[in-house]
Image (cartoon, rainbow, N blue to C red; front, side, top):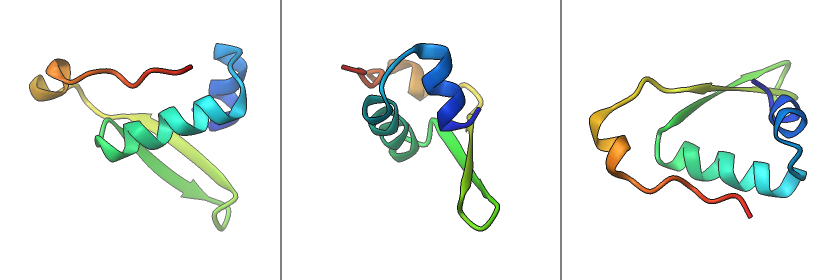
Length: 61
């Protein structure tokens, strides 16, 4: 999904979605693919890992 897709499907504002994506990238829970010379970013959910199930899920406020 793109950031725009996530915003549309969750009905959340841009900033909370952006912040949550950044937290998920830092935890290696998602992969960010960059296309069109950095203009389009696609986010992919990483495969489930046992250690990630124990970690706290980022909160979107």
